[in-house]
Amino acid sequence: MRTISYSLVAAAVLALPGLAAAQSPLRLADALAEADRRAFGNRQAAATAASDRARAALPLKGILPSARVEGGVVRTTDPIGAFGTTLRQRAVTPAAFDPARLNDPAPVNNMTGGLVLEVPIFNADALTGWRAARSAANASAAMADWTSVTTRAMVVRAYYGAVLAQGKVAMLTQAQRAATAAVKQVESMVRQGVVTKADQLQATVRAGDVSAQLLSASNDATTARAQLALLLGRTEPGTLLLPTQLPTDSAVRAFAAQDTAGAETEGQRDDVRAAQLGTSAALADRQRAAATMLPRLNGYARYDYNSPTTLYAGKPNWTVGVMGSWSLFGGGSELADVAGADARARGARAGEEAARANARVEADAAKRLVTLTLQRLTLAAQAAAQGTEAHRLVEKRYAGGLATVAELLGAETAATGAALAYAAARFEVIDALAQYRKAVGADPGALARFDTLSHAASTGAAPAGATHEGPTR
Image 1 (tube, rainbow, N blue to C red):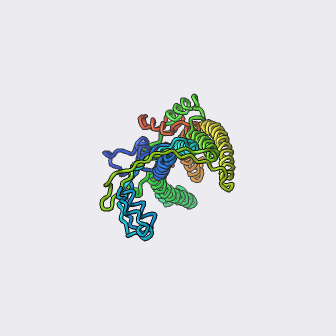
Image 2 (image 1 turned 180 degrees about the vertical axis):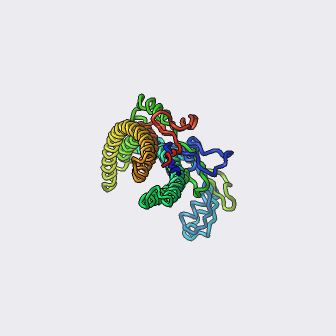
Image 3 (image 1 turned 30 degrees about the horizontal axis):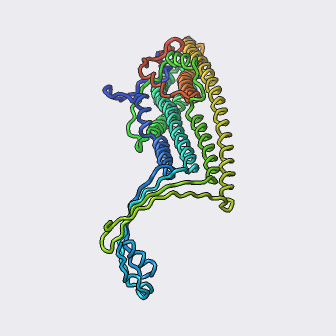
């Protein structure tokens, strides 16, 4: 009599064949650090924030003193210009007042040089504009931080999704080997007259189905690794060596119990902080628009040099002054600016309220999702254990001639499916925890704590991967 062997790999992930033991798998903490530095979205957001910080300094031109150096060369026969140039060069003589010379002067050369200092005294629009620009730059920096948090949550999902995908490949690889061996055994038993041709066909169909699932799982695993590499900012996927197991059931549950016990406040979310700063910027911009209708007061001082042959030569002239200006009406453009700034402020206020409300909704939904996935994990663990036990019982019945090959193959299929679902349920809890931390304004990277925990297979309700030997018939 022959033995029919079926492999039921119930753990979510198994050791992949062909990996060198000396290689160290990529840890989640390392993946997060790499994404912080190299992720495309993070780098774009950081560049935008840096650009906004640079632009925030532009209004300082109307607040801080400025100094410049001037120089030039002039040659003129203009009567006023020629006489003025001669006077600036301290070269006026009685002959210079000759009417013929005044009316028809000879060409005069002048090398001009100047040192100029401008001192803003009161420019309300520049002050309020600077405050608006600073708030806008801070809002951009907060959004860059939010992009980083979002990326970290995506990395957690992609990282453990890739681990799950390669574990599914390992599981189905074992199932394919067992199904192929079962087909050969059934063929031998058909020749011996122990089972019918129908049993052989059913075993062949089962083997083909497992092979199809393995092809799909292999493709999914390749895609998952490529997506993780892209998320980390790698232009080429390269070789990603990942852990062979998801965190244990007990580790996931312990983290969930501790993490959801102390929810963070939604005010700590960077997108909410960005919305608050955006409102501050809009309010300051409204003040800037109104300040354009206020008087301006600026001072200046300058040293001027005039020489017919040399820059910055001759006796200098100095000038000190204060200039006041007040634009009473600019054709209505200032009124349009005020109206537009006021509308933008109202929009920013609405956006801040929406961000706060959205944060509350997301936090509540994320917490409920953690509870839901934990409940699903419990059911999946029970189903995996029950599937293993059902498979064992059907094997006994088959050995006693009380069950058909179809029933045995069905039990093995159900058990393998339950094991896959159990692994997926554990991944869903991990992803829900990352999304929860993001939703409440905490760091999803805290899940890197799993790096330091044991990656042994789950105990208790989780069935251990094993090869079950059916009794002889």
